[in-house]
Image 1 (cartoon, rainbow, N blue to C red):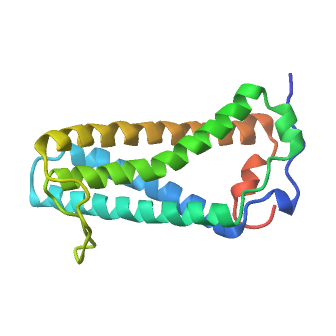
Image 2: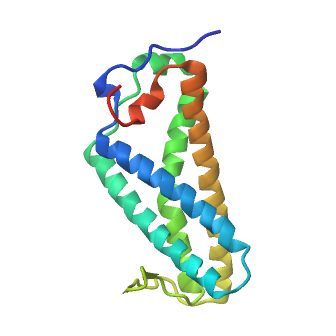
Length: 191
């Protein structure tokens, strides 16, 4: 059964170029910071590990900042609606998965870095952005709290990675199986 809908060909169905840029910058940043987190987690205690932890924190604060910019931009310039032909071709569960994945990603864009920041504070390590700008600790130093926040940061980071993979899988499905042009909405250039 071919449920492919007509390809997206309307400029109004595309995301604004700023939205596209924010999407891809944040996406690439998330992949890089997740990979760095996995890599540094297994390193023995050393100056190199401390340096990578600082880079990870800086990247996390950058992701948090980009997430605020992206949310503000999304509220200012709402995304285009899915073309009705696509909505009609999608089973209800796919449409619900589409919505829930996006909501989950937006929540985790904020939760993961904020919990990481709180973990660093609870562990007694202030975040000093780029080595020059000390950020406030917003939880007290506490070994027990640090343990809980460390676990929460890891679980949330893996949940975000899973949702990113689900998002990518959905986009690939639309590109390869449905051939409905959905990915062109978030691409650079003209469709």
